[in-house]
Amino acid sequence: MKIFRVRFIAIIFMATFILSREDVERASLSSLFLMDKDSLQSSRTNTTEELIWYVQISANQDEMNDMDNYLGIADGATDGFDNEIDVLEPPPGPGNSIQVYFPHPEWENILGDNFSSDIRSEDDLADHMQVWDFVVVSTQDGEATLEFSLNNLPEVPIIMEDMETGDRTTIGDQDSLIFTVFADEERELRISIGDVTGPVIAQDGIPTGPAIYPSGTNVDITWSVNDGFLHDSTFVFNSLDGGESYQLLAELSSVVTSYEWMVPEVDSGVNHECMILIEAVDYASNSSASMSEHPFTIVGNTVQTEIYSGWTLWGAPIDPDVDSMHVNIGDDFDGYWDTFDYLDGGYTYDGFLTLGKGYWLGTDQ
Image (tube, rainbow, N blue to C red; front, side, top):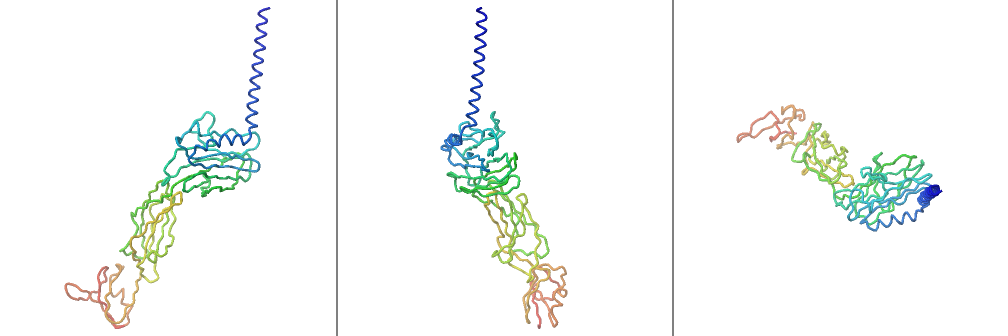
């Protein structure tokens, strides 16, 4: 009789324990699903009080929203997971939903790889950008809206990039962006903040005067660029009016450091006001330029100049393909003409045209 009573009590105890555990689990699940947005926002908003600056990202689609997602800077924060300030993204709720989160599988957190806040250590943003990758995902096709609230940010560029298309948008306070989402398809985005310093260009091989370049020849223009964050693109321009205006020759990616320029023809046969300009642009759209230190000369295949009757001191700006004086200028005169070179203290008749030498040209026309 005593033994039976002990077994009976044990069975009653076990049944009571099991029932209590189910009640606890049910109550916990109910609390999770019934927690209103105000209580969730309140618990997260407290973390922003510790931030030096931050950006709040909110997503809306129809009746769905995910309002409380933060990136920012705090004293004592690290670029890894900080237990007291980085917040995990909860699992999706029942039914339809839209989520914004910062993926960090490298943090190896047992509760998941996605986070609703990503707080970093402070960095010098003068010539550098801090970068946050984030994801937007919805259970429904349609148009979603991202809203950005900037709080105490320094005066630096804020760039959002669509990682699939490469499209970039400059973000300002209270800006909103509308884009198309597809059900259960992750939209990978990136926000980069900082950098107010332009790239530095080294003039390794930019043509400059005094120099003469014949039309139709190829000139190799070279340069190098250094940027504190990311050099994005390079533009090559030329000017035919001493730098008053420039015409675009090429738009190049950052990996290209040279451009083969074909010297153009000039209407007058010679132009003494030619210049080359190289412009480098970084990821934050800061730009710097480097140009020819002095104008240089372009000469056409046929160089013309006006000669009046009498004596003219004259010379060739380039080495002609044929150096015969008669071949080069003989067909320009109908009457008498002649040329003389000064050599060894006296004048001598010279029938050859050479770059760098001066000649007296006499004509009766």
